[in-house]
Length: 91
Image (cartoon, rainbow, N blue to C red; front, top):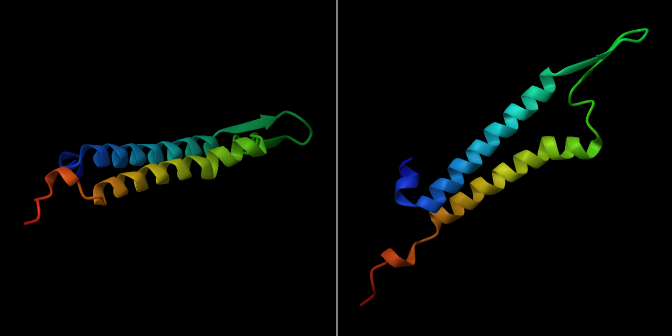
């Protein structure tokens, strides 16, 4: 919140990135808890993650984390960049 007060764009980007990171953790947790059981002989159970295709697994596992990390890095870049409006003119 302190960062958002000093630079709104950077604060918004970092807050959004943290939200996306927590969303990725939550989605991965839900898929790891979900299970699908088949009534065959012998009965077999798979996690929800195992039932996804390879492309969906790539988006779910590293893809969501990469997007969240990129947004956080964008916020850090915006925060560390000097704002030209507030610079004092050189004499």
